[in-house]
Length: 565
Image (cartoon, rainbow, N blue to C red):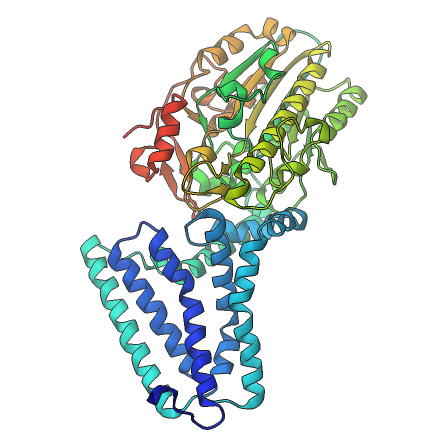
C-alpha cells in the first residue's frame, strides 16, 4: 500500500506511531459514545471532531514523535478518563473529580489507587509504550513521508469538518449544541476550568467573608447550668445499609435500643462530593444559593456569636478546602491523624467537656465513617460480616466490599451510642444532631457503580441517615422542640435543613436561621422541592425527570420516598 511505502528516516515507523497514537486517544471517546445518554448525532460528531483534530495535531510536524510527546498531557487525561469509566461505568471526568484530586489527602488517594490496580495496569499498557517509542523515534530522526503527511492532514480536516457539521445540525435541532458537555476532551478541559475557578474562590474566602456577621440575637434559654450541643457529620454512610432504615442486617443494634432518638427518614444530600456536601451542612445556604457559600460563615461562627465555646474535632486531614475554612471559625480546631478511628473523637470531646464547666459548648465531630477503604475504618472485633479482606475495586468482590462497608456502619453505631451515653451521663441539658454528608454506591445492580462523587448521582448516594437525640434534661426544658422533631420525622428534606435544625435546637436566633426549615420547630413548612448540586454546581431537582435510572426510582419507592414529577 502506498500509505506504508517506506520513506526516508523510518517513515513506516512514524506512520504506525501516528495511527496507534490517534487510536488510543480516541479510546475514551469511543467508550463514552456507548455509556452516555447523549443524542446519537452528538456522539458521532464528538468522535469525528476528536479524531480529526488528533490527526491534524499529530501530523502537523514532520516528526510525529515530537507531536506525540507534546500531546502526552492529553494522553494522561485519557488515561484518567478510562480509570474513572472503570470505576463508575460511565460519565466524563467531572470538575468534582479534579477538585477531589486537589483536596484528598495522599493516604486516601493511595488506598483508592491501590485497589484500582486492574484499571491502572490497563492504562499503563495502553498509554505508556507509545511515548517511549516516540522518544526512540525522535532519537533516530524518524519522519513521516511528505505525501503521507499531506494525506493525513487532508483526512483530518475532512473528518473534523464532518463532525462539526453533525454537531451544528444537532445544535439547531435542540436549540444549542452542548459541546462543553458532550465532546471529549473538550468537556474534561472545561471541567478543569470549573475546578480552577472553585479553587480561586476557596483561596479568597477569608477576604470575601471577612465582614459577614450572623447578627445573632440573645438566644432562648430555660434553666440553670451549661448546655452542650454536638453536631456529628458522618462520611459516606448511606441510609440503605442502616438497620434503622429497614436494612436486613443488624448494623445499628445499639442505636435501635437508644431512648430519646428521633430518626429522620426522608433526607437527601445536597451533593454527593464531600468538598461540597460538608460545607453545606455547616452553612445556611441551599443548593439554589450555593454561590453565597463563599460570602457567609458557618455554624462555628454562629454559635460563637451566641456565646458558646466552639470546638471542631475532625478525623480527617486539612486540605485547604471549604470545610477547613469553616472549621477554622471555631475556638478550637483539632485534626487527628492515623489510625483514623472515630472513637478517638469521643476521647477528645470528653477532655473538652471535663475541663470546661463554665461555658455552653458546641462541638462538631467530623467522622471518617464509612470512607473507602472500608476495612481500614474499624477494629478487627467489629468484623462481624465477612469475609471482608479484599478491597480490590471489582464487581466480583461486591460481597466482600459490602461486608466491610456494613462493618463500618456497625462501628459507627457503637461510636454514636457511646457519644450519646456520655452526653446522657452529664448533669446538664444536651442534644445531638447526626447527618451523613452523602451515600455510596456498592455494585448494587447491573450498572456496576461504586463509590461516590460520580457525575451522575444514584439513590444510594442521595439518601442519607440523620437523627436527633435529646437528653432527659433537654426534653424537660424544651419539650416543644422534641415534639416537633417527632412530628417531622418523615418529612421530605435535604441536608439544607441541618444547619437550621442544629441552630434552632440550641435556641439561637438570627436572620439566617429559618424556623420554617428547622425540623425542631413547630413552624416547619414541608416542601417537596429538593435539589442537589451537579458537578458544575448547577441545582438539579430531585424528581423523576432528573434522569434517575429505573433502579434508582425503584429504590426510592422501596424506602417510601416519593419522587415528584
